[in-house]
Image (cartoon, rainbow, N blue to C red; front, side, top):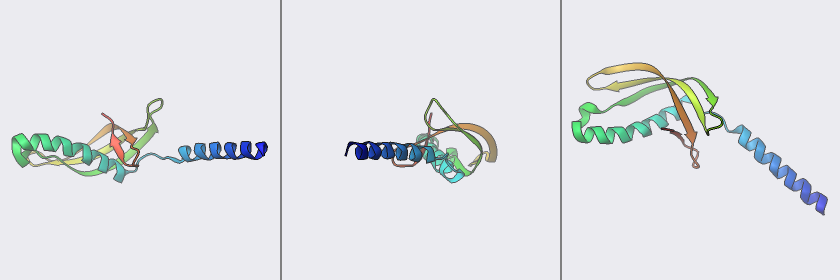
Length: 111
């Protein structure tokens, strides 16, 4: 009985390690959603003062590379982000962004 219980606990521990190892870095779509969510907060502030002329829009996010941000949680990713602003038009820039995954599975930008 004790051996079966020990074996069960060992298997459960190993399965937990395997599942945590399976968590992967965010893809471009998930990164864009996280950046749009972050940008929405900024747009709420700026459009309140300046109107829609200040609204910034994320058009495209391309993941260039990611690496585990250990010892911190999440991933630090190099991205190319294309944005559009009413007065400035479209522009694409490369940036390094830290993404973390929330308990609900959604990715967020770590400030």
